[in-house]
Length: 365
Length: 195
Image 1 (tube, rainbow over the protein chains, first blue to last red):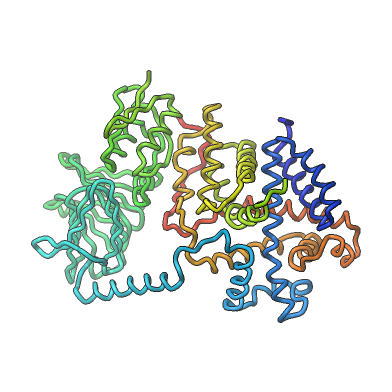
Image 2: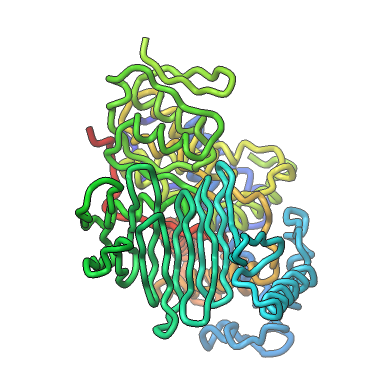
């Protein structure tokens, strides 16, 4: 095996071999000749074998183009050798028919469609019906099984690890993070959402006549048409804005309104009077990765990352070694895979990982 | 070289593996240098070529990612140059939905359109050769006669055209399966862990 041979050089040679074998066509003698020479070139070189297989598969893939040739020979003569791309002028039905025929010939053996077109339509109809029902009952939340609190607000609560995306009737969207609870109460002049605990992100449908106000303890965040998140912890309330501008104030201190713009976050501490505003769009994006069921880190310590995972999982990550816990890392993970995270961390940070009962321990020997 | 399922497997690779190469490359690019990346791609195809059957594989995309990942992990073990996310965030890119796409016909049409656009993008004579060979299904000898050029010139154009198509496939946009998972990438790709 030549270690010095570049991947590009291999790729070029692989394409030549495919062309050579293609030239041999159906002639068995010529094929055998080329085949022997090809085997000698391939040897037991992993990269050469891979490159050849890739090139040969790509060349075979181009056979798909022949369905157009075949179809054209019926309707239009020589449609593809002269003018260009007349295939684009086909209407969809023609294309579907032709494709289906081709599909049955060669491809059907490897592809098993799981949902029929009919089923997809039925599903679409169901969603439409749900939205109509929601309109009739005057619910602020789209979807079935909404609980109400004693003032008529609709309660959306999540369990540990659960992340819910809830469409609201005005076209706004709420993403509710793990172990959180919001109460949605739409009034004629105001769209009110109380964050009882945890964290939620809102994409607010624009309506200047009916502001969207989130209440978290004694903190208020008001928007007319923006996207922002609110998180409530023992230490205070954090508002992070991803689009537009949000007004933030404390109840009883209405004269002191802070305006937070996209890419900035405001932290209203439980004990301090001052609201702290900082601008860091990448950090905000990372901290909202949970909306896609992910956790993203960049320079965070292993300890901080473990703490984040522990918000989402019953299985807790434990790191007793402070030196190990202060190692920094970069990465993007699924919230529900603390085990994958722990394994990756142990590989990169040279630590051991142990799975004991409901715990994942990271340690260094 | 020729095995019973060979044709079937190659057809499968054309339909279910090659379209995702751009996505796999995008994922690898975040943790590997260009030379290592090419090696991993070639080695992945080598592994796939060793398959005796593909009936048990429900998602080519997921399979491709998993194969590439295991090769990356082997590299990580040999040297610690790879960032932590490379081995862990596979599912984000792969979004390993095992489901074949529900609208197979639409997918097939898109695939055909893609094959056609690959051919259309070739330089003039190359395109003509590939067109006659693949769309008209003419053997190389006949293509040479039709175009009035030597057979070895046709063979050269086939090799050249194929190579350009392979490049285009490598650079194609990651083919998402409309998963609803939004990729928010920010900042530059990281080649190593920042300490």
